Image 1 (tube, one colour):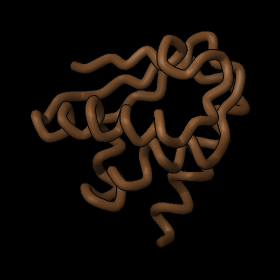
Image 2 (cartoon, rainbow, N blue to C red):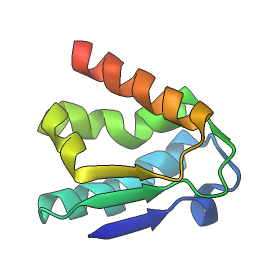
Image 3 (cartoon, rainbow, N blue to C red):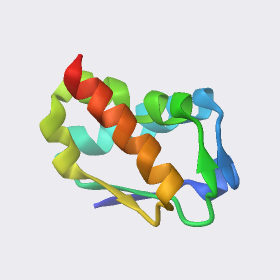
Length: 95
């Protein structure tokens, strides 16, 4: 299992989509390709932009299909962050 503590990478508000892209390319995708579960830990993060979450997970869903979400755990998300994640996931499943 790969755990990624986002606070140390993005601070209390996750908005930088370039950082999200780097996390996706250097940490999430390599773990998925090794068939590992990935935990994205949102502890201490008060909010996130839709573009950050989109940059973090949308290409993974596009590449591996919606079933890849069975290998990704979203941990310590507040309600606001959870809603944004759900919006991005729903959008990717529709497209």
